[in-house]
Image: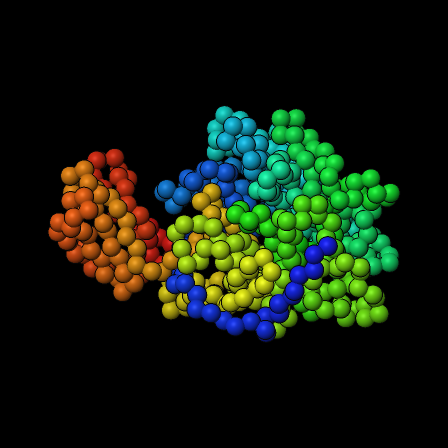
Length: 482
């Protein structure tokens, strides 16, 4: 991977073949700053009040979504990691589906050592005991480990499936082991680690977690169970560096963002309708939708699946897999896949109906207009979801987390005059604000609020100081709140 973090055949769509469509009005609001190597955000199922920020240096921070503040004490700090200035360190986090009752979560990280001396991946369970905002660093239960011949191409994403009949199965993305073109020391010939079923490298793995015991087993219906020499943990193969991936929480499709070598960046899909897995995404013989130029004479593996979408390195060089938006705050974005590119500093989107990709567009300038806020997107390292399905962008380049929001006028309902009936607080994009005092569904009177600079906007309301009166929460484009 070039990021300094620092058998159903689907048609492939290249970026040059798509028509751009008008995107819904979008904006990005900075919700956290001053972070060290923010790499990923996530939240426990049903926990709408907190966002967990994974930092590559081994620290996990909690953002209180109600107050917009970071907890002063880290949720967890891992020690003894490999050098985190490259592609190793703390790379992934997933909460147990029953986290609300068992307090278990899972991390993907690298530690020194291994047969090649270039690090070992640990996927481990940890627990919360007592204080829900503090995890127990001594609660580690190791589920699976594997060595790396080189220090790059570690994958790092882990996640649980929302698919029916797939409960408690943890998916683990692994890179091909590093170097270039999946060859050299520690890479199996012919065709490299990604095409070889005797190694866990260059794969999507699937293991069944016993959360109570802190152990894992191989599901009996994994596609290569019982095959001589093959590792039973393998769910799909032919991947180079699937750094960031996701499940569509509505359809169950798995979207895989596989970072390319010298030519193409790609999005692969593992269809929920293929309940048996076993897909081969083609690397190292294929790169995106083309033959890998480094191996022009190698035949395409039988049954290899091309990506649903790829683009050349004139667009970007390090794809960051994203999410299908399933939140409720931006109706026009619902069902759209949002992803990015680390090297290019861009955020993209497209529509996917299960067969075809359409409406590709670059939405960075909408989210980060250079004339507003005094900051721009530097190096997006991930997209992530909160418990409600709202989307966030982690920017490892400037140590920030941004939330994707609608730029359309918003109305928030609260009781501002104490009559026991909800009132409506309006704000439009020109900066005007008004308060409608309502009598149920009937308009009563209006109050125009004090004019403030257009860099400030209303982001919430509530009784924040406990005096029984409704207050207004403001935020400016630099992230400051009042």
